[in-house]
Image (cartoon, rainbow over all chains, first blue to last red; front, side, top):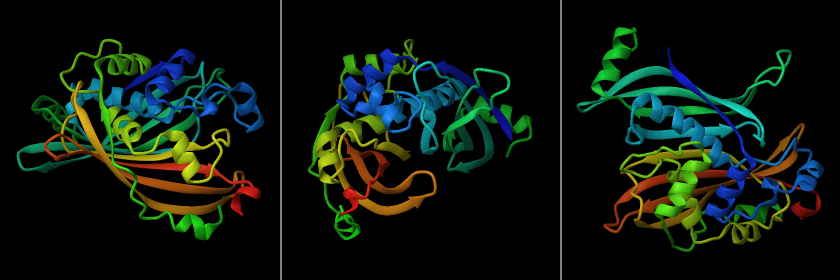
Length: 147
Length: 148
């Protein structure tokens, strides 16, 4: 399994408000601190699509283009909140061909990085992706033993 | 909403909607997910979720009403499945068609009773060609009173 270079981001409150505005998403769990406390959540909830976007950014950065992402399936395990440092990670599971194109099936995940060395990472989402490979990237992966 | 009423939602066709990926919204969105320097000719793939979701025939508050759930009840996006058939373009208006694909009531040891409701949404371009298929599953925690 060849690892995909990871990507680290920090969740920002103003970004949550921007996404709310773009999506016309009035769900108060994104901004109402009293509500999230009453619901037993550890903080205001970053949008799931934003978490998905960080994973997509990792795939784009690796493959070189947003046009390469062909399929993505993710399950959300936990929430992310303002101030969290998140790391998008992935690895190539296998390669396959369709016609003249070569694709990588990848495992992906997003984790919350611990604030202290004694803490564990927390899984925010996990899933799979199918990414079309450029000739160069395919050659690199085959040289490293994939496929 | 009791389980019988919930099950009757399966197959319900959402009103047809549309969504335009405007340049200003696209710029704000990619900035909000830390891609301020995004400079590709196609829309960011996050719009495979955003465009069907925002363009479906329900606004989010109407969707919550439809499934009989309060806006402040703590609903969350639980699972997403995106298939890219064609690239999305900024400045283009797409048609969104959708239906309720499945509903399921579950019991969690920590979370109590919750409903999983999955929408099957499709994004079409002006040639009526399929651009994106998006399955989005939402988690609705249910209190005792909400299950009646």
